[in-house]
Image 1: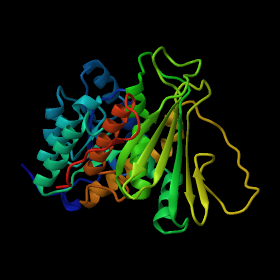
Image 2: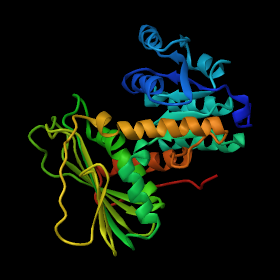
Image 3: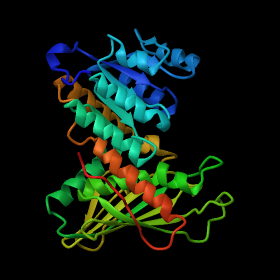
Image 4: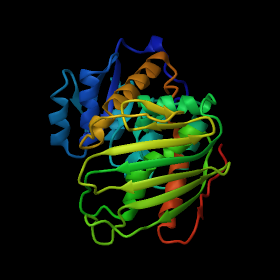
Length: 348
């Protein structure tokens, strides 16, 4: 097992990236690295559907296909790995990358439950290195970064409440309440940790009368309340069948000002009356966060090339564990009264 991070001197001019999984997100990442990322190229691709893997590899000069993730991780022409496979495979693939000493950018979730996520945390701790970045791309969105910096600098004063909204145009059949937690609310969960730098300690679910476009048995819209370690409250309004488009907003109530992101391309802070804004609502998450995805992958590539492996704003394995624990509590809250505690283990 390698425990020594790569150094810039040991890498070629371009970081050679192996991509595991080339469905929607993986294919987008291949295109992103090919067309917009500097200092990297896709060298190896693998997917359960080999025809799809070959189709995607054929769009990148010099890229080749291998049969398994294990073969890709061990390949001599791979310096770093991007995991975009289904979430149920993330734990084992992330641990394999860590054991091989490969820097890895893993799409969320880190794992399907807190215990599996903790195994990834423990594996990285045991390796003695720092290898894993987790794909919570909102940390690289300009508005999110500006809001984070405004909170951490004290510009907004003492923070009491954070209001989040998460809206989709539509969902696929079978998108049940638990998927609203693990596929949608998980992003707000990580944003809470990112903005407030403290863990979520309890979650409550409030289920109003479903809207007319909700599937049978689906509670849409849904409201989640999160309590943090210091007693702050975060609301997350989920409405995933609006028939209008994709929209996420965050409003932070501070003692010195109220700041909002998601209503335009940056941050709006209101100290006085009369603020105005205007913009367009995209159809789904990809155009809304394309710049964030680009920035995330570019920062990761730069970190790998520099030998640090993980960019400053990137979510880490521990962030993935905290998100998994909070989502597990939120799922329990769907059928419980009042707040459900978030159970977490000590950080190794």
